[in-house]
Structures are given as structure tokens and as C-alpha cells.
Image (cartoon, rainbow, N blue to C red; front, side, top):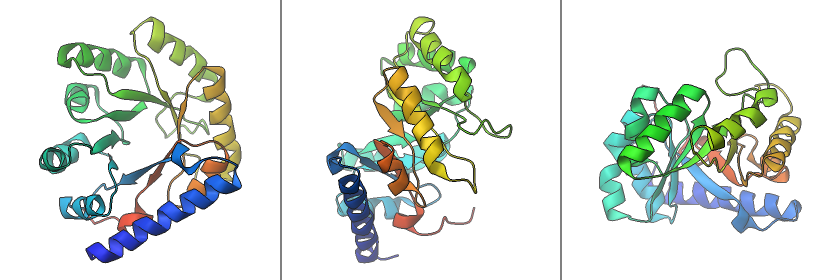
Length: 225
């Protein structure tokens, strides 16, 4: 994809975000676009940077380590989000590199992140992943466990979760799932809601999303591994 084409796609997504926020009676500035660049090369990220995008998401620590250090040196205001699963043995690497981690989903990872933050002297923002449809094959705390896990993060591990993240079950209406995530966040005093992807981010904005994770609509289909 050319730089011009990518810039046009990025502009179209931003326009859709602004329109969705307007329909919801919200300010577009209250919604951060996280451009998901997983499997796409550093050149694609650089094209998005040239078009003014500064917030990016990656699924894997190792891929991010190969792509972003040089880019961060050239664009010091680049912000990097981890949106994929995190193994405990990669916690310290994640704390070093990422500004926001969306996938805190279990006690062992909370312990590992707390330890890594103490070691690195760096505290990326943390979002708790909620398995909003209680699907057995998915990671995340179930909705009925979320309040207790937020409390444990604060009391047991001295973590300060910034918000929640979810991926609704495929083939269902996402709106009730997004509404449930927003209700849990309000109950627990959490400001950030990471919800909505290329196919449903406008619905997520209507339900209060503050972070939308958009990849395909910006970068096109994922590159084959």
C-alpha cells in the first residue's frame, strides 16, 4: 500500500470515529485510535506516522521489539500498546517497551508485572482483559470475577488498573457486551474502555469506548506469517 493510500484510509477511520462520537454526544477527542499494526512491516507504521498517527498496537512482544525501538527514537511521542496475550516470562520486556498493556488477565501475570515494574522503574498503564462472553476458549477474567480482580490488583499487588478491555463473542450483537464492560468500569471507578475493532468500533464508541483498536481498516488485510 502506498503512503498516500494509507493516509487516506487513516483519515477515513478518523472521520468515522468523529461521526460516531458526535452521534453519541461525545467529543471525538475522548476516543483514542490505536492503530493495530501486527504482522505489518515497520514501513507501514512509518507511513502512518507520516500521516500523523502516534498510537499503535501490537499483539506480540517479540514483533514489537523488532519494529519499534528505531521508530521510537525518531518519533519520541510514539505510544505503543500491547493488545495481545502476555506470557509471564515476557512481562519485563513488555514493561520496558509498551506504554499501555491491555491484557492483564490473571493473578500470576499481575504478580509478574508488579515485579517487572519495580525492577524497571517504569509503570505502563494497565487494562484488565474481561472475557465478556465467558467463552471457555478465551483469556480474561469473567464479568462476575472482574470486581474482585480489580480489588486484588489494587490491594495485593499495588497496581492501579486504568481500565478494562474486551472482545465480544463472534457472531453476536456487540452492543450489550460493550454496555456490560462499561457498567463494570463505572462500578470499579475505571476511566478507560478498550473496546471496538474495525468491524464494530462505532458501536463501541456509542457505549463509551475511550480506546478503539483498528487494524484492517487502516493497514489492510494482515500479512501472512
